[in-house]
Amino acid sequence: MATLEAIKYNGGQLEILDQLLLPESCTFIPICNVQDAWTAIREMKVRGAPAIAIVGCLSLAVELRKSPVLETKEQLHCFIKEKLDYLVTSRPTAVNMQLAAESCLKLSTLLSGDTLVGVTEASEAIVKHLEAMLANDIADNLAIGEHGSTDIRKKSIGKEKLRIMTHCNTGSLATAGYGTALGVIRSLHKANVLDQVYCTETRPYNQGSRLTAFELVYEKIPATLICDNMAAAAMKQLKIDAVIVGADRVAANGDTANKIGTYQLAVLAKSHNVLFYVAAPFSSIDFQIATGEWIPIEERPHSEMTHTGSTRTAAAGINCWNPGFDVTPAELITGGIVTEKGVFKPDQLVPLHK
Ligand SMILES: CSC[C@H]1O[C@H](OP(=O)(O)O)[C@H](O)[C@@H]1O
Image 1: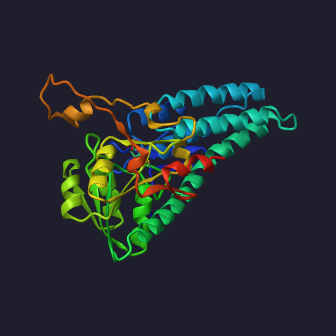
Image 2: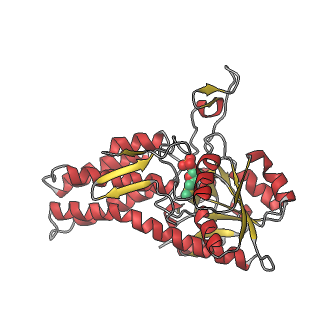
């Protein structure tokens, strides 16, 4: 069965699944330019570190395909730099859009310096680079799935079937397809070694109850929804074998920023002797920062906490604190960091950086 897809792209036509309407409604909306993408990302109609970068970059490809070719490569470089710099401002914590922008601008700089390449050819090469992100991300996720599944099974000797806890949404709705942490879960299910997935609600945006539960039910993967405050009791009473989560930004030392609530799961996993994994492609690793203290943490609107849809559920006038992410120290990532290149201890990442 095909997995769900959050992003549809075909030669300059881009649509995204409006994730604010899930699980009640599966509605695709058009993204016609960079401004549409920025707004959709900010409003979390599309979310998830890899998906943010992919939609941002594809929206630029849409513009480049539609607009008349500029007169010079310098004008082209200025055009794409302005658009990419703007896209990076849509949400601050995930590093993927920033790294994708840097990669595209590096290509544009190379093309600008090559006297054998004209502006039309340069524009076409940049569009091809941007469009390749979709297939590259799916390939990364399939590799992450296999590496993670192999590692968890190797470290769970004697266990015929495994019980895995996961947080937020890291599946086809957060990526180009298959997913990162949910990709590992899909691979464990394919290997017929998955007893049950325990997915947390992940308040206040409810990525777990609305999105991950939707993906798991859609693909008939055995899963149970738990409230965020049930995690400790679940680890103790339900004998969880491993926790696997995604990442929005991994620092060079392995400290990892992920959805709020991840840090407490890592602390609980440590105290219950449960393996704790982070699954992330190298496109989520920021080697420009040494530790997690340098990762910007997005503050989300208080209304996400005080309302369910348009219905107020919290007392009017109460103050709120709504950080969208927290940072898990590398030493709590006991299972390892699962990437498309393999599973590594946090302190093994820097030598792998090309
Ligand atoms: C595949 S990484 C997805 C990552 O992004 C989520 O955050 P958000 O839903 O706010 O974009 C969450 O941190 C996931 O782990």
